[in-house]
Image 1 (cartoon, helix red, strand yellow):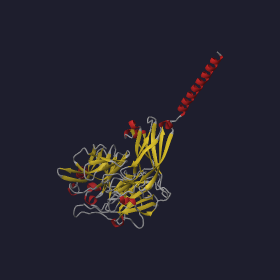
Image 2 (tube, one colour):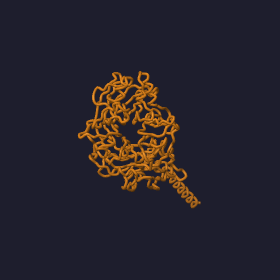
Image 3 (cartoon, one colour):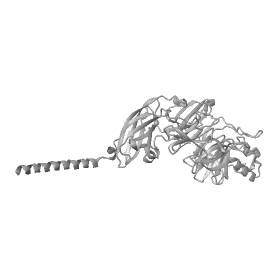
Image 4 (cartoon, one colour):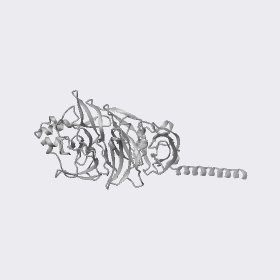
Length: 507
């Protein structure tokens, strides 16, 4: 009897100990963070379509609690551009198909690598409870020898120093490849597999949108370097030319068209959706014919179908007053009402055909109170202070009718900013950068603001059209960096814009 009681007590004690251990185990499980439960490990890493891109696969036991994944690429020694830093939100991971539930794998590209380099990369997964998991890996990138190899080794005139130029990465639009991304130390950091030309390009919602220079197609180039075409919905258009910018609801595209067998050259602006749908159109020939006739002028020797009479090279939407600013390289900058297409004002060289011979257009001209007028200008934008920023090339018109004034040609090109007083109908050049010795780019070229007061200036055809030159310049004219490439027409850089690869969130 006593022995059986002892065994029973021992059994109870063992059972209690087991129950206690199980409870503790359950409590330990409750204490585990979502990051710990996810069981993350790097399964695979491999090269992408160019050396600047790698494909990474993570094992992930639990995707439900994942909030975001980010990566950071360590900068090379002796460089000053901020590290490439990219975050993939959960919404992006779901929409892109990065999560593969049957295999319990999360796949995504790591881009912005240095070519011909052992890249130190930090991956960070963040979960809904705030817990994180960090993986560190080395991604070996091969040397780049593709069509954009000219960007591999710029001539560095002034290297970037520790001081910030107001941006760290540059998107270059040219005719050699997809859009190109270089850092402000001069290193090539991204190139896709195609398409072959990127004059008409826009970085939007985590992808590059590129209009074809040969066909009415819009390409979507993903950051993994792959691309796919979408045809425009209208069969009137033949191709994209010059730039692509954000519109009111879609993108502003500069397009050529064919009307009754007659080419309409660089005089049509359309707002299009990424799906290729045409949302709205502004025909400069129709707008100027109507305006000139209403003002008592015969437009037949100004608006000329089949001739590049307008040469639209830049167009932007201005939300402040629901308007469009459009650059006609041959003539002026024109502001029109978005809804009606009514011309609000013109700003340009008053020694040209449009001003000298047409009172209807002269009546719309702003009076320049200081500085120099835009001539052959490119790359319109609105600066942080609300003023008009553009690249003032300084080259006379090429397509004026015989016997009419072509206007002035200068020996210097400058980025210029203009303060516009629409009430007084005046304009003044409020800022310019004019280095000594002067730099002249007769065609193409651009200026865009990074941080307020900092500028990225592109001279597409400098040094007698032999070099393409990129500078970071502040409002006082201090140069943060200066490097260039051998030029082949405008192919190397039609224009370039700041792009944020240091704090990029893909949603």
